[in-house]
Image (cartoon, rainbow, N blue to C red; front, side, top):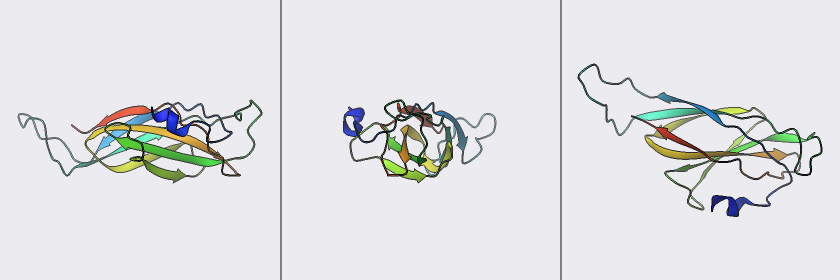
Length: 128
């Protein structure tokens, strides 16, 4: 369903392998304190991916200009994504996330502004 919205958006092929690290915004309670439930706590997620080396037709990619990171809270709902414009780095840390379930995906951009299809989404659960 999420892929239908983004099919045929550009000429780049992105073979992204997203990896992540989740960092909490506060320390847990001490022994015997139970599981912390602090609704205002925020978390950060660090994502990394492999840069594409070819375009959608298999030619060597020579005009990669950067990436866009998209993420959805809980589940994919068309129009509910958050998009972050990124430079040419193959990683980003997203901060200020509340506890919950997220989906992350990345696209590549060429110098003409063509955008690749979304990478496969990476589900991430953050928080206690």
